[in-house]
Each structure stands twice: as structure tokens, then as C-alpha cells.
Amino acid sequence: MIDLGYQFECNTFPDCKAYLEKWSSWCFEHERQPLAILPLWYDYRNIIDGKSRNMIKKATRYYYYQVFNYNYHLDEIYQINTSLPERQGKPMSPSYLTRPSAIQKPDVLCLTQHRYVFIGGFNADGVLKAYCALAILGEIGILNTIIGHCDSLSHGIMNGLIDYIVSYLKTTTGVKYLNYLDLINCGPGLKAFKESVGFRSMSCQFVY
Image (tube, rainbow, N blue to C red; front, top):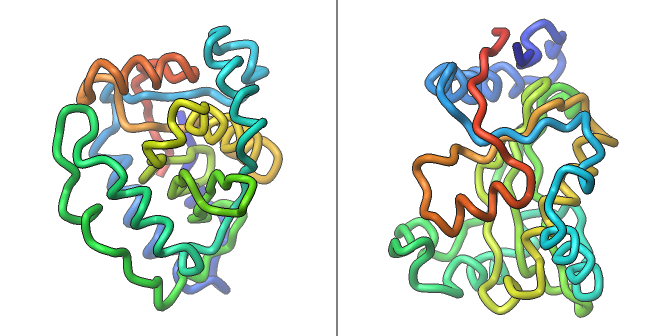
């Protein structure tokens, strides 16, 4: 049972209700279906394989990770999104091929039970090379978008990004589970990556 945080009082944060309704609808649609889930109560680096640990170590030599302001990095996001014409054997969707627009009005959320953040991996020059959009609802974090620049993938940037996300969630939220879609509707390469960084197929039931 995963609590989405409906019981939390968010009356002074005007966008929490709409945000919760939007994402709980996603949870309802996927309830009891096999999802790619990473439980967060373990020592993360002890549950991943040796190759992933080595990739995380490699990434620390090239990148640092932090929450960032989406509007300050639109050009870099566009460069990441268009750095490959296709991924997992499929062409990039039109939304990735269009330069992103600035977020005009960020959601006013409580930031405890309900939070939407962008987390990025930056090179030594401060250039964004990978990022994720992370939705947080009570006890679950949902990776809405996660993508890296093609010239950084071999340096472990995505392994380092997952490692940082886990640390961020464990130290700043009450999230107990991280979701990365599923292990069925993805190519063999992405499936192997998800499994290598700790995701396993689980069916979930949510508390609304």
C-alpha cells in the first residue's frame, strides 16, 4: 500500500489539489499493473550490480548533480533532447524535437508531500548533460522524464543521476518507492539499464 498523501493538509498551497488529482489519476490507471519499482529502504549501492557501482564511481569524476531551475537551462535541455535522432530503436517524439518553452507559472505546492522537481547532472563547466523531471506524491516518486546527452552516456551520467535521485528522496522526502514506468513496454537495452540500477517489477496498490 503506497500512500499518495491525500490526508495531508494543503489548504494554503493552491495547486496541491490539482497536482494530486493529476498524478493520482496516473496511479489509478496503473494500479495492480507490473511497474518498475525501486524500494528505498535498502542501502542503495548494496542492491545494484558491480558494473553499476563502477559507473556511478566513474560519473563522479565527470559530473555533479543537483536540483535546478528548468527555465535557466532551456538550450541545454534542447541539446540533450536532440542529441540522438532515436532512442531504443524509436524516433524521438515531436515534443523532444521542439525547443522547450519556459514554465510561466510554477505550481505552488507544499513541497513536503507534493513536489515536482528537476534534477540534473552537470559537467565541470556547469553545463547540463542529463536531467529528470520527478513527481513526488506522498510515498512514491515518479520519473516523468529522464534523459541524458549522447556524449555523456558512456561516462555513467545516468547511473550517477539515479544514485543522486535515490539519495535526494531518502534525505529530503518521505518517499518509499521510486517508479520508472515498467519493464515491459521498453526495449531490451532500457530494460537492462533499469534492472542494473535496481528497479524490479512490482504491482502496487495506492491509498487515495
